[in-house]
Length: 337
Image (cartoon, rainbow, N blue to C red; front, side, top):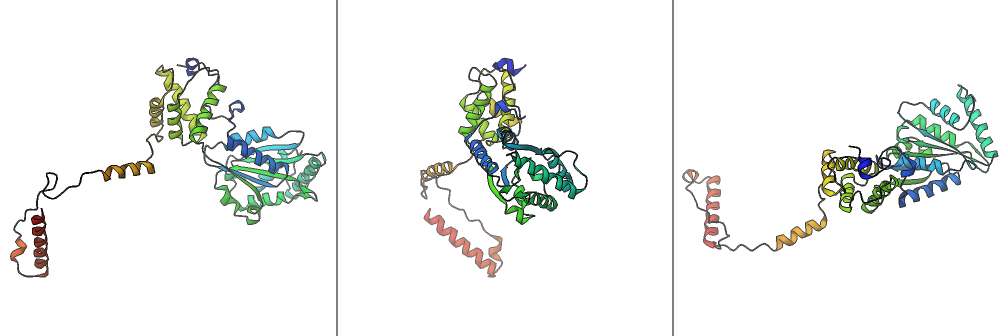
């Protein structure tokens, strides 16, 4: 069954493809864009946005690219798809992205071509910007040195080129391979997972943008989505997409927490309530109300019955003396009972 028809939607609301109309401008995404725009407008040189897998870095990179006015910026987005690139390939690709025609195969000549192109962009009153997505794949010292060299291209008034790296937190370690480059990071921004309120707003926003005219998922369902996904946007999309499919198959008009829990389990995602400090305190309170067991009461354990020990007849060795001492202690305990 097509869940779009069942729920009255005109488009898949939870595709993991970066569809601009579904972009959710959360508070942290909005602040991240403001900070990155500041770094680019001031031509700070190198800015860094990091986030864990599925946090929405690629979506934000495309959003930033769309936000750069073509009248003010000569901008390009470069996506790194594997780790085996060389510094020569990187330099050539950046030159092409910024409009260098017929880039030369000789590196020194190519650098000269790129510098002239950057000066042209500057003289046009524009700023040259390159956004690098999946930047954690830039993991060699040679590549880091190449970026440092490019950031040295400047005129007396300002730098001629700015970069924004979008990547996993490990990019921070890669930058340290070239300490002077690491020191040139002018701005750092981190994307964190959504809290439950942001998850709720995100899910409802995407359903609304997909054409939902009624409640498709209730609050308990969304809370379960948050628990299963940990607030990671990519996982939110996966859980919600599967929940819509299962809900349509079961003909559930509103997706609830039980259905989402079942979907999450099928996806091997966590669905159990986390143990909190409040749970521990409650357990302690219950423990403090347990009845006190008095010796001789019905709840008290029966007295210990002493059995003859074969070791008792073996003499007065240290082991025998220890056993005798234990017997005396147990007899005393029985008398107390």
